Length: 139
Length: 313
Image 1 (tube, rainbow over the protein chains, first blue to last red):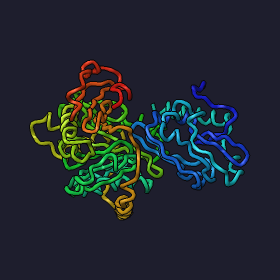
Image 2: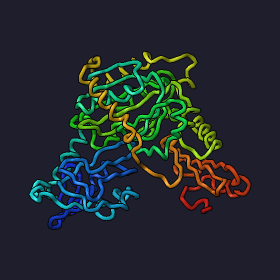
Image 3: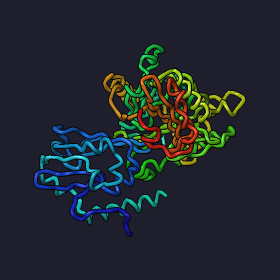
């Protein structure tokens, strides 16, 4: 199956559709192209603020699009170093530039071993294909 | 699928049971209507920006902040609620949650059609009949479930709705009420006899049965009642109600899926109301001193709206 979504090779991913760029003990995270496409036009975004801590799988923020709201669940544990203030004011940037201006948070990692649990671009691509197949079955 | 056909419940129960089901990870369909009026904010609505608190307090209209999307709504016994809670691992639930509205709203469409309203989906989540909104709907991921909530409008109090919203002045409020009346419709506009809850609930049950097979009629159990009360306590907390949310640079009120009413201050004693339809200017009204000098108005009708269209005061 050909995928229409951009999945840069140099990033990690998780099954909540975050991309993660690891740089030593820090990571930058954002919503993947597939994630933003499934979410739809993002109207509002809330993120934890600098200094707050988060565990893997805990609520990192909240997103609203087209009369749906959902939680953003942190792909890694750590302390928020910075939230992207620009994307909070202009949340549509997550849709238009998911891997660039649409980044969400910079995190200081609590446990770098957690990185081993993330997906490579190849594994994430395979996971998306499984999801797309399920979506086609729903119709 | 479990069915809780609750009929009349208190205002807070009409919100708390579906939250309770979702937090308990239990699927179910709830039908009900509230015994008294209240105002319901979406999860990301900004209380201070949206609500005329003084009016609500004076009229003793309680406020609730739900954990689903969409905007502020005034709810009362003129509306019948249908609330469907699905586990997120339910294979019927698409990843793009808004895709499910088409299915979720089918029973409501059938119920309206039974009474002669040509209701159809206006994506993502409105129903409209003859171009006028007849049902507003929302959804949200709550716990490990997703809740879809909607209502059938038997009647709607446009006057109270226009009073609960914070607006710049009485003329703007009057225009808001007129705009809602012109762009919304209810069963009362189409049927010349009264339509009761039981009639509508039966039609909704029939519609949901077509999707889910037999529905198991349930009564409220202790676990559900306990959880709903916990949620009521949490959601009654003034801090929860007053959570900040989406801010607009100009007062913006969404009337329906493609219809917005904006306010632009044009001076210390003047403002302009701009009605947008699909992003284009459909009408403009000038209040205060603006009324005498704005001669360009006619030429702006039909124009694509952008921040600088009117110029700056």
